[in-house]
Length: 236
Image (cartoon, rainbow, N blue to C red; front, side, top):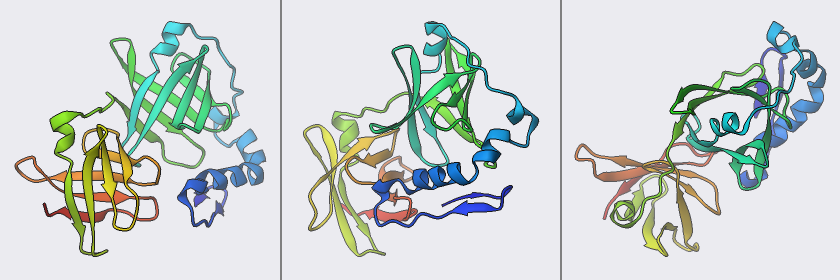
C-alpha cells in the first residue's frame, strides 16, 4: 500500500505472493494517476528542471558501496557499470542514477525519487538519503559487507522454537552457507546482510538474531512484510 496524503490518493495491491513486489506495482499505478502532480510539483525545489551533469569516474566512485536502511532492515548497493551508477535492490530490481551534482542524483525510472549522498570519509560518502514526494526521507548508512565464515557462522546454528506457531526451525551450515529447515519444507539458504541480520535467499523474509547479556544468541525474529517481529527462542 502507498498513500499520498497531500493528494488524498492511495493505492492498495492485494497479492498472495510477496515476490510480485506489490509496492512497486502500487507505485507504478500512482505514476499514472499522479503524473501531472509529479511533473509540476508544489515545492519550489520540485519546480526547478533537473539538469544532468557529467561526473568524473573518481566522483562516481565516492558513491559506490553497501548501505544499510535501518527502518526497513534492508541492504542497498550502489554499483558503477560503464560510467553509470545503479541503485540496486536485488539482482533483478535496480534503478539508474542520473547525476545532477556531485552528491545528488535522481532515478531515471522514477524521476520524482532523489538520492543524495553526504558525509564523505576518505573519499567515500558514508550517508545516503532517498527523497520522494509526500514521504519522509529514507536514511541509510554505509556498512562493510558481512561475510561470516567458520566459528562466526557457527554461532547462528541451532534449533529455534515459536510458541505462537508451535513450530521448530533448525539452522545449520551446509556448503559454507547458513541454512534454515522448516518441517515438511526443503532447506533454504540464508544470506548475511550485516551482523545478526540474514535474508532468505530464495524466499522472502529477514531474520534478526537476538543476544543475551553475555552476547550469546538467544533467539531471533523474522519480518516478511506481512509478518512483523515473529519471535523464535533458541532451545538447543
